Image 1 (tube, rainbow, N blue to C red):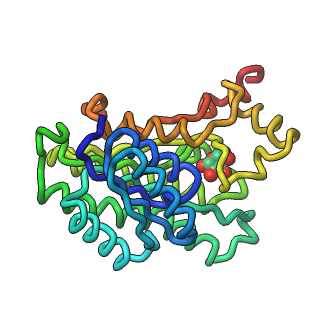
Image 2: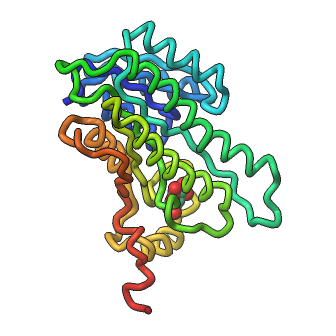
Length: 264
Ligand code: BGC
């Protein structure tokens, strides 16, 4: 489905990023596996992707560092010739109530989750615009997928830094989609709900926690990283070539205000 395309996934050594990098490789893309800590895991992901007969390498970079993002995108252009797919996935949480939240907790989350996506989108867009559409490869000149969250639209007490970063990702994505669409670049977001990954282990790793969590999920199952990876593959494929500036929530219905199933 993505044969001949060159993809870069940030934060691809664990969780949603890892599953997405593997799914893109399985779909035929060559893949750069970005990580900031956890080289061994990144190399394992690379080996798994190479097992599909495509090319892959791991690249260490902090997405919130401008020079490192510039170098990372310059390297994929040098090694793979260009870039067709940027999955701006790297993200983290530093949870705290408002009154206890430090400036460092606020800033770290904004830097990685929002500024990091801005930098990755900017550098990818420059190469997409330079190269333009190559019809044998894809109908579009490039695809950017912003990894968002249900918290792009669902307020989240105790996580104001995270929810603000994802709300920002939503508006950034729409603005970039509007700005880049005339260049035949598609920018969209995928908004995961509760997915079994290291970021939220406490929310599902005991039967009690999982039972509480399931109350928020009408479809009554916690998501797997592959649920998100499959959505990203669909989003960047030409099957969805006319999808521009959309957030695809992949959340088992978490954004359907499940509390109103009985109340209201
Ligand atoms: C957060 C998880 C949370 C989920 C649903 C995600 O964006 O990273 O910690 O479980 O949203 O609330």
